Amino acid sequence: MKTFLKLLKNEQKKKLFFASLFIIIFSLFISRNLFTDSLPRTDDLELHGARLANYYLAIKQNQFPPYWGPNLNYGFGYPIFLFSYQFPYITAVIFYFLGLSIEISLNLTMTIFIISGGLGMFYLSYIKNKNILLAITSALIYQTTPYMLLNIFVRGALGEISFLGILPWIFIFIELRKKSNQWWYKIFSIFIFSSLILSHPVSLVVAGPLILIWLFFDGFYFELKNWKKNNYAIKFLFNGFLSLGITAFYWLPFIFEKKYIVIDGHNIINNFSNRFLPVKQLLFSRWGHGGADISIPNDVFPATLGLSILVILFYSLIKLIKFLKKENSIKKYKDVIFWLVVFFLSVFLMLPISKKVWNFSKVLPYLQYPWRLLWVSTFSGIMILNSWKKINKFILYIILVIVLHHSIFYTNPVGYISNSNHDWLEYFGTSTSDNELKAKWFDEHKNIGITEKIVLNPPSSNQKIDISSWNGSEMVYEIETDSSTNVLQKTMYFPGWEAVVDGEKVDINYMNEEFPGRINFSLEKGKHNIKVNFTNNTPARKTGLYLTLVSIITYIVVILFSLFKTIKNNKNQ
Image (cartoon, rainbow, N blue to C red; front, side):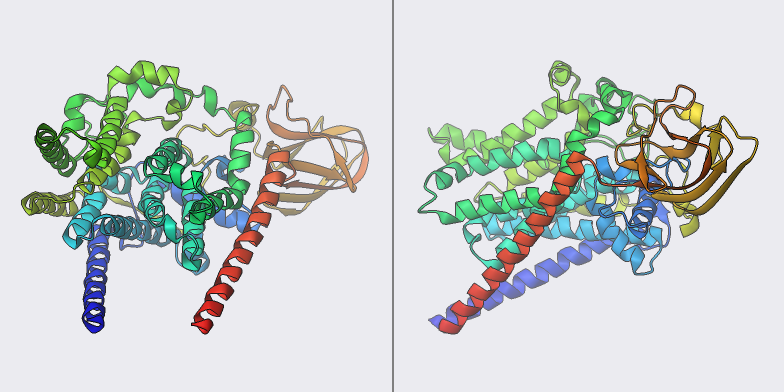
């Protein structure tokens, strides 16, 4: 009997292995147009190329962690990595350091996240249902719904691609939380939780509450209440808090230094009312490569639910109504109902009728585009499908036909762009769509006219400027002048910038009326050695880095302790 059970397990492992291999091969098929040394021409991938180049430069210039884009904003610099996501660039910069080009590094990164999302959804479905056909179908739906492919081949939304590649794994570790005592769970759950936090903060605005609500709906509150009996609940909670600690270097400055940039009063936040989806488009849209402004006539931006999700919805509603007529209790179908509520709530928030909710909310406007909630509709739709104990195989076959169609016809970019690495490194824009991360006090129109790295104001009749070294993170130079003057440096001021003259730190005046936002400090007559550099000397950054350091050390200790304990237990058996 034991031999038979072992054989069954081995057979199941073989099926899982080949199913996983199929998901990887299918992912590569979807990604086939990324197997090139050029970037697909999309809304945002050019911006990500510039960001990756500046992430690399920041590391080379001893920024750790990278916060400042040294060459962006016409050489004035830009706080891009304080407020934009980090995990996609952490991944991509590894490939760039290995000698690959910017384009190939980004294409590989997107491919990895596509594979990760597919495998994650496959295992999430399998853990819930132990049905390999359903698990494969769920993974393929997740990878090929219009919104997923829109993010890759139309928008080039690297942050959202990474977020969606990680999201199913979060729910896997929620499902497996009773195994939180095991060493492998501690290693991978903390890594996954941390990766999600660093992936796409805009999506986390919705994902965070959704994950917490599902966790407590799934019984975690009662597990936590009886923590002495369920000690895994405390360890699961500890893993979550440790992930917050590991990523504190990012989210603490993000929260507390956001007040220094223009985004809160920017049109990119306040124009959401022009970006709701009509019901017709939500239900169906032909494919196209139009821009995100859906008001432009004849410009197809294929933000839509997709046929596979609609099939799931209609099938599930009919099935639920049929069962509820026969049974009085809804407890049996609580998961189906939960995800149906999530689905319809996300649909409601994408329609113009929800405008009052958006106006009232302090959080939703940060999504910028209501149709960004399509990931919620997609994910909840797949979870609805996986909440049924039995599913008609014919429905799965219909969905697989839709999947095949999308994987062939919705995965072709409109074209490609190709720049040299030098061009990416010297990119002069801000790498944001509308300069929304600019410091509040910086006026580009007044500053752009002076292109010199250093200007003395007023100029001296006998002045000498000798630059020893200059990069976007640190500048060292010598100035000799026969009169008192002000040094105007071609750098946008942001908290953390410091100027040291002859070993003494001096005040930076960044509110100069003539050149607002530019680094400006006074200088007495004579010969002076000057160093100006970007530091992490702000309360939020120092606190965040301290918490990150302590949390990483704790993470390593926890892993080592768990491994030694496992080895010891294995020896005693």
